Length: 221
Length: 76
Image (cartoon, rainbow over all chains, first blue to last red; front, side, top):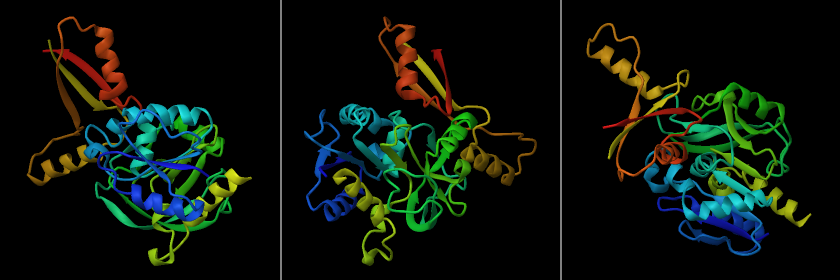
């Protein structure tokens, strides 16, 4: 699997994501600067990392979503390339129109930074390493993770099995406890929790690792 | 041409920051504040020839996230 990680000014989980990707793919992911207008040839996985791109000015992810590289990411997603946004990356993907809805300020107004239970809610290439209904533990660290969409969109996501992960306890006020969703084609996932921070035994648990392993298996198969 | 663009949360969208302000006003002893909604004001200075359609596109493409926000443009 040939992977790329997008780097915006203010990204701070780009290296964590790169370390996880290198561990599962055996090769160094390419780090792609936000000002570039093209992805490297032959990329089959694009990671949009966590952080505070452009200082979260205007709205979280809003400015990053309009950066030159994001046009190339949208085109790649349209071609079926796997695109994975974590935390700020999820905010960027919604702002770019690749995923429906928006991520608002946490209902409790606090920055939430702790490990939370996540229930695997839907089948997708991203959740192939888990059983639907399984509960895993993954850290969150965000201020704007409160997922919002209109009722019709929420019903559609639910009806089409596109809710990938739900919080197993109240975290940020997200509609229907949504922690992660996929697009209608199933090749784009956005999630607020950080599976790349639950990857090695030194992290305290390795529940996030299977997400990355399943993607590599999916590409090889 | 100076423009004031007001970006506000759509009615019905939960506004936790507005709620916190509401609560703080109550703590200061102000009675009778029924509700508080927080929004933003973005001030633009654009060429006089800028069309209304372009201004509208600026709002839709960047200044407001129309999933959760409304916008209103005022020529100042």
